[in-house]
Length: 364
Ligand SMILES: [Zn+2]
Ligand SMILES: [Zn+2]
Image (cartoon, rainbow, N blue to C red):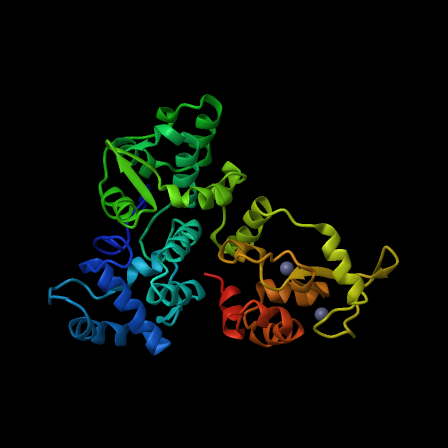
């Protein structure tokens, strides 16, 4: 089963099969899995597989069947509401945690926005699917095309027969050039991405369908525009999976304008010293000790928050070594604790916990 060049669906079946908040088989199952893992905080995959069916039986309308327990968490990995470590420990992500919180408060519009924002980060290859030889962000492509096509929408046939075979930037470059969606590649039909993923999005009203075509739901349009209007076609693809975290930064740069004066303001405030340790020596540049401005709550998190992250209170000065460590270090907890404590007022005002901050710096 090597070398699959088409978009796959995770697990078995839909992620949601009714509007959020309505009770239905898949809605109950998906939410129950989140709750189970949330209560455990961390749980090994083997413990999950031993216990989940009993948990579902006791807490939902679940009927015993022989589906593989791994299928119960895979859709949530695909959405990025869960993460799994190399030692197979399952845990909610920051977004999974917030999603569940708002779901329990019946704030379903917020929940939809979390799903939209999470889809934005989904890639192929994806930890929830297998053997895919693609390097792209499927939902960035889907939503960018839906936005471009506007009133025309995308047809079911297009999604089944062409979109899921879209492999590279050149396919979209042709579309850019000719504005003709039919020029986008490929061949036969493959149903699962369409029938599970797309239809789940229709069920929860992120997409709407009319006469066999698909459109962005009205209450999502503004958010989709915010995410994709200024995003280049290049940002829909990547070359190296190890660069995913940096790519988030690159995308955030395209999306959210930054005020470079704020960085200078922060450096002046910090007296051009590294805020992890003022004694960190660098070199003289433009007459002052060289430091770099860093957004403590990363700019790629802007889509999840309504307050402005490009705020001098959220910017700190770091020497190049500390800055590298924050972005690439294996064990970031110590350095993140220091950063958190530097910005306590900002963190409290905006309801960000230390645990939230760790989760923001987690790199898949
Ligand atoms: Zn930085
Ligand atoms: Zn430093």
